[in-house]
Image (cartoon, rainbow, N blue to C red; front, side, top):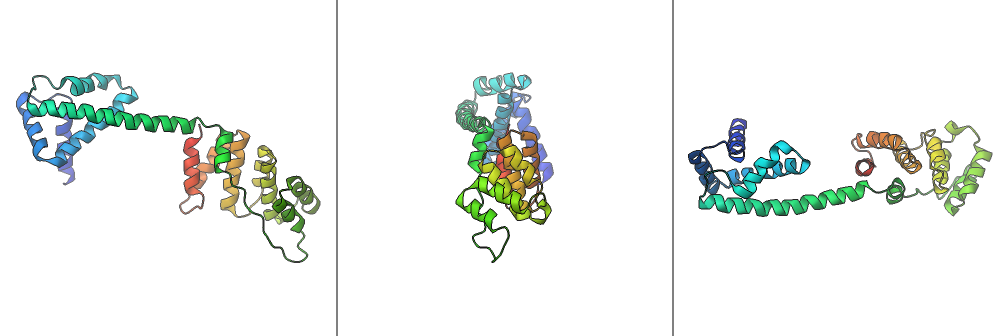
Length: 245
């Protein structure tokens, strides 16, 4: 079917749904639907799209839909019209159940608190298991692996101080340690300073802003991640972004 044929079928279906056909033309359309499954399917799809408009509250469309679903077009009393009308009502009931379920689920997801969303998506990264002999950062990572997050901060301050640029990996784990101590704002400020594995860092930065309650900054980070093809956290970022309201 070429584009011109699609346009003609769409216009014809629209006229039938709006009740703009006379009796003869409407009867011909109904007979064509009986003979042509593709046309009938297109007609049903158009009905369902109107249902979406109806549920969205378009007052100018509601009465026309009510007439179609419950009364049928004026002067039509053919067996096909009656059967099609009842089939349409049944289809609407089914779709309403589906749409309602989707909306309820969507509302449920959107009403989750930032703290709950954070807990759902947050998985702490593992610190390096082995270190080179004499590695000055060993105490930082050893404390992190033990879950002694206060010690992480102490060792970081002792070893790194303010030289965050020279120790991006340690700075990243300091940020995670702050998250573990329920200091998300401070964690975000630290994570924003490190260039360690940018994909991973930006994801945890988004989570830190989310937990701190700063939705605009969280969304900004998530949108940036979701816009990058091939980003390791792209799908998760897209999902989380849709749930933040």
